[in-house]
Length: 262
Length: 362
Ligand SMILES: Nc1ncnc2c1ncn2[C@@H]1O[C@H](COP(=O)(O)OP(=O)(O)OP(=O)(O)O)[C@@H](O)[C@H]1O
Ligand SMILES: [Mg+2]
Image: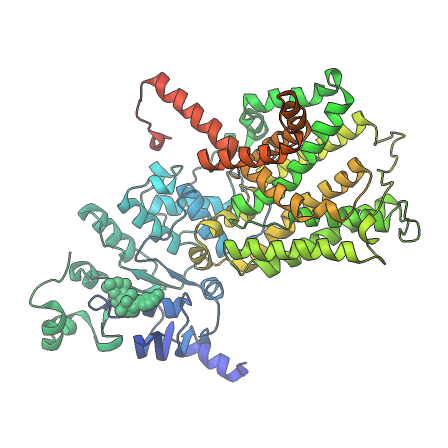
């Protein structure tokens, strides 16, 4: 329960995302320990870190896929720490998965249609969508935006890896997102698909902020204005891309003089 | 780029699309659909009363109950053993609220009141069972629903005040509407055909509605559905409610078909039989349960005679059903429908000389 004054101040100055002392244990392993970070509305940030640094776990704590063991998560000022994932999504949070989480038995357009339906009313509707259904239309637009129009009626299980990654992004763009978490969207993409991805990210409306996990610095540093480095489940460094790139500690720990992986 | 532009600046659909909607729908009905419809409508012209009542009438009713399981298992990935009990619950309610030989229990409500109330009570029963079962997965769903089904069986057998215990209710019959005696073979056949067709079409239609699509999404990937904004628990429970509707109607028809309802109607045997029917027919498409039910009824009815004529012990017909079940599950996890589809694609392949398929061109 928030007081009116609290809510008012929250609405005015709230960060899109505000994590305070967030930890996540898996048995004895602290996948995330005492992470505190805030992201402003519209801000675009990269999260970097070696394998097992806790980047995906951070996303899971924000979306509620795995709730944090301790700490609080606020989304646009609202404490969502104990919300189930769907309540957070309905408030404008979106995500993609590092390993595609799609509906292989459904067609491309049905996948996107479900995403659009999930964040609107009528989830329980027994009436089939018509061709001119507004949501179906926005699903088709999203399919088009990720260059899958030619494959819209194909079963998702028959898509190539790169196409599945693109569909994964379309699902995260459904409805009216306010903040998106991209988990390694560029991994495994061809150079063409990669530049298409960069175009999608840079042409998104300015009010939509995101965090992108990306190992490829070429991609990451072109689409963000701030960077968070993670190491062993904790935040190791924060700054703008130039600072991070030239930071000697970062160079030593992560970059190793060149570009790591991919 | 039309990205995130909610108004959709590049309209894809044209007005012509919306116009031919009905013709498009009729065009969707495959040849087998027309043939089947014609056959079922004309059956009473050449089949005996025994065949249309005891074979097809019974098969359609069992098919509807198995259909409600198919909806949950095929689209929702939830194998519920409670559907037969939901059906029996509706049958019981019609007997209790309406008329039966047990006049000291039956309330004698008019049909237009007792039938809807019976369906609602059975749907509530299905919903509550669902609410108990949906947080479990796989084998645990089966165990919980089996436990509920057993509880229902023992409760009805031991409760004499409401359920009349071991003997249940006799002299159940459909109301005389429009001056028709619906217990007669031909009217009852058409009554059952009407509801079975309606159930089939409803499940087929809903499978492509937002509710049905989302249910299939939850079956394939509940975590992702949650991350798309769906409340998967509520959705699964709603699926139980929806499925219970068809089971309830079938349960009422079953009580009229048999003229009675008793604990044995939903004993563990019949509960398992519904699972067998659905699996044998095929869980992928709503026609599967009806195929399975027809095979089951034919076996139940004629296996005994066939066995005896072969000089074998007639009591072995259960063994025959079990053996058939084993063979089908072993050779085709998708049931008879799956066998048929494999045979069709095999024939298509050998005809076209293994031409590669290009689905992506559509
Ligand atoms: N569901 C889980 N159960 C147990 N341990 C887990 C689970 N998820 C993650 N971990 C562990 O938590 C640590 C952090 O994992 P996480 O997936 O967050 O790393 P990451 O930074 O995303 O790495 P990568 O670059 O490989 O994707 C790892 O040691 C991992 O093994
Ligand atoms: Mg990861």
